[in-house]
Image 1 (cartoon, rainbow, N blue to C red):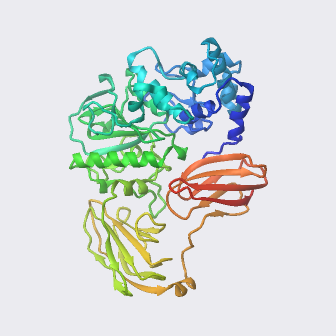
Image 2 (cartoon, rainbow, N blue to C red; image 1 turned 60 degrees about the horizontal axis):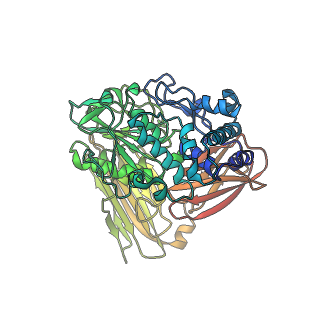
Length: 558
């Protein structure tokens, strides 16, 4: 997890004080659009530096490009020339990175005769300092998309500012060309130099992240010099989808897997979890359901979802060849196909959450009910490609104990999840594959069990039984922690572990004793944060669950 060492808010405030003509909030909006207010260095990139297909690298809080690879403008040089800072100073210091951009922006505004502090008046200056190419017809829409993302963060009338372009840029009631295979997508065709006619049947989907901005990725795919493309690109902030290559054609996105796959790019940098928003997950899952409905060869149940195996192998980190064209898993990461060098989407992409969003229409089998106090729960000699959900219910003010007498699943491929509640979005108690769950107890009157098997090889399954107890009985032998927010250890060393009561997205910020924000991010579920660069002292962690707005504060000592 990335630690922003400087106080984020004061970096922008300092630059605004020294450049008072800038509209308030403009710097933050540009930074958020390009980097989500993270100071990018080479360490933040997972794609090889010498990979000719990777987008030009952006640096610092403002996302400035040093090497445009013949496609993008090298705005780091421009900002350095206009601000008086050296390129090295701008690259190394987050505060100078922001201040240099602010000074350059003021100078461009002066040259262009911009005197108003209305944010919309500064659009020409933002365009001038952008890395995106200009001058050709194909460059117009990516630039407008970038500007829309910037002004989306500000208190402006977007409809008035963007006029007739607003429906297209926002995705609201857009009438798109029928060139799109997915009706909710914008159609921005990549040039023929970046794709070719497909000669194989579509049988898989590759999940990517861009390592660059949404508008930047679209612009990159529009340039023949990049020799790369994808079928779809999805925006982080709102989940907007742009299609660039027809599914009937072969995009250039995954080497030897290009011929039989559809490529979907998600706007993100791999080590910045905040890019993976709920809106983007949901939009991507909608796209996957549409693809599955059009291809018998792709089943949503065959989405990668195992993350870490019982032996500790982390399948969501690094490269893991899960098979080629005939593999069971049809929707998986770039890192999971043969002959790859890219490790996206990486460990901050929640595959289990994504799987549940794609496969969100299965109805559970309900066991128990009013007055029922026990029963058997057997699932023996299960089949391939199963996704089964059971909910065990009991009377109010009771709990459920589920005990497994036997348990046998295919190692590394078939899994059982148990949740402390009435559905698969309840807090997860655990996931099992090679070890039996033994005895599991709920904290309330519902327990949800989910089972998934792959397309090959089965096992004998399980035999289990359940019984109902009172709250008082379970309180004395409760084996799972109650729902709560938690920090551990406390006092904290170099790593702060955060525990949340339910799965989902949380905005997290750490505040020092003077009330200054020293770190902020968005995470999905329990997480660890590297705090070894925080000074010794007392801090508060503020949590806000994105979906409900529920807030909580915990304190810790460093």
